[in-house]
Length: 63
Image 1 (cartoon, rainbow, N blue to C red):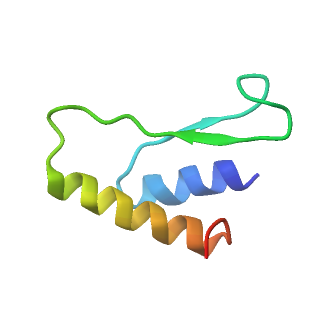
Image 2 (image 1 turned 135 degrees about the vertical axis):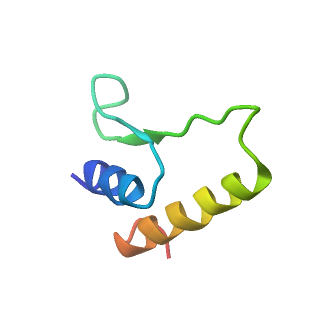
Image 3 (image 1 turned 180 degrees about the horizontal axis):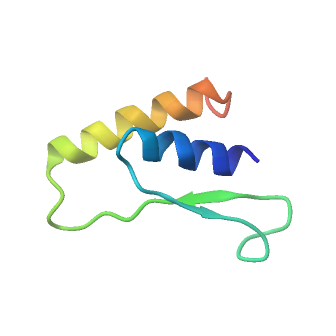
């Protein structure tokens, strides 16, 4: 469930990430997939890291 919530929170911040759920990963795991391109700027990557960190903290995924 947190996988889909973090995906929605990130989308609301302007970041598109893909949820990865079983059977695409181990049954006990869920993941999010972030796709970077050579055309992304350092500023855009920094923004994404900042916002994803905020989303993960809100959900208690990281401290």
